[in-house]
Length: 441
Image: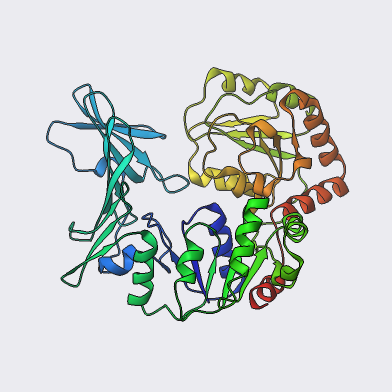
């Protein structure tokens, strides 16, 4: 069986890694190319580009080719290409990756509107360009380039047409479904069985493969009546022998409650395998990563727990609002922290406060989960609800409850253990053996 994912988002990554951690060597295909996929994942772009295997580095922000006398200015968040004082382009870094690595460059017109976007990959090559309607900022075309900077694939977002130049021949497709099916046949995969994690275009792709029979849906999102109707539609395709795996006990029970009883034996409970970096050592060391100085009620919480060590780190400079916290002997601040320091803090600390307003940095909450830190936070600032149960989240106005819970956790090992177990259940954690069994059912 082959994994067929539409995009390689956080949910797909968790599932992909579960196969790795379980020792299951399963081929994975991602429909949408994003430039930084693991080497063992293939895409239609990778197949048709016929690129050589090159051992090269991704592009550092100041390595983009620009006209003479133009300049590149950047900080830890993003960078700009300028001609004198005129901003010609924005350089966007690859999130949760290495330091200042280019993901895309957004080229601007005189009024500051985006005209087109160049996308770069993990070997520092431009692999795609999106052209936008300047007035509406809607996407018009996406061109894909091979290693030699030749356009071989063009996607028209207005008409949904795709044009492929392959082996000295031009192919025209009326939809992405047609294109992906052509790819699967060209790659001689049309007889394989597939597992999908979406009910958008993936089921149609699988259904159009007349020689493929077995199919699995690994449902990772919320369960609604409308979603269940789509599930029933898939399960009604007798030639495909669909089964649905749900990696959450609550959602599994909800599917059973909503779906026709005749399909109950084809709804399976599943989960994920996690490779926790360390065990929680039950220390009172508390970590927060932030690029914002807005940590609601942090000073009150610090003052209430003098026996705790608070470690607050940022990849940028810190404002005076944060720097003033240095007056507390149990606070350690780390402005402009490098990745090595972040890793060291995850290894030292055992509690994570997800209370910073603004964007999450370095996929911090998921990293805290992987390092087995107990995560507490506010509903309004929670950055990853997939790994944090409601019982560990609080209203911002009820920060005293969060502070009290923090005190209970540090005072009672049994309380902390129960919270960690709840956290892992929220994330659907199961053993390798359970995961393998669910995949073979």
